[in-house]
Image (cartoon, rainbow over all chains, first blue to last red; front, top):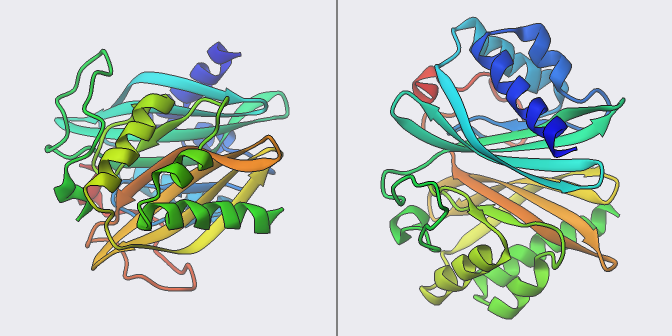
Length: 138
Length: 138
């Protein structure tokens, strides 16, 4: 099951970088309620707003985004994936929430945000400090 | 059910502003896998890392955070709440994911991020543009 969730997560990034609006649309849930938070943006709610945002972004040319280190957390028919994103030299982190719908894992929520330069250097062993810089929270 | 989820969401912010580490600990899932993305920070994974981060933040004094406009999206025993956050003049947006565990709604994931000053002005009718500024994504 984790493999299927990882495949759905990768399909999302593939659709994005290939600017494939139809593939992107097919990846989002039909019945479950969807939402999306693009980096630096407030929340978009509902399928119409969310899909319009993806079409607008991809129409302007998708950024060269690369996802890495996807970590799957499954709770029954819902799963969330936390993964790192890179756009050029920018570091981001994403939460992608999936629901099992019509025998497929479909997105219900995407929340991506920039990782501050004040944060710990990227590493592969998750050995990061446990508190964010106070300057970010204040 | 939505009322219970909203109450759990508010309890999370109450625990935070009151710097109540025990209440915060009780609000997070015991068995389901947890993760957390603080603003500007990369992902913290697992209960130990996540709870250590909250203890460290609260030990330093919680920021004057206020949550508003929580919107509940429920899928069976999992729900996610998208809400606005304010810290002084800073605008943030949060995704809080809950699981129903031991007859209570408990947090499995919190992802908060700053809303850029380039984003649309805050409003109450969700009438926001559907595409983020390109400058944020590039």
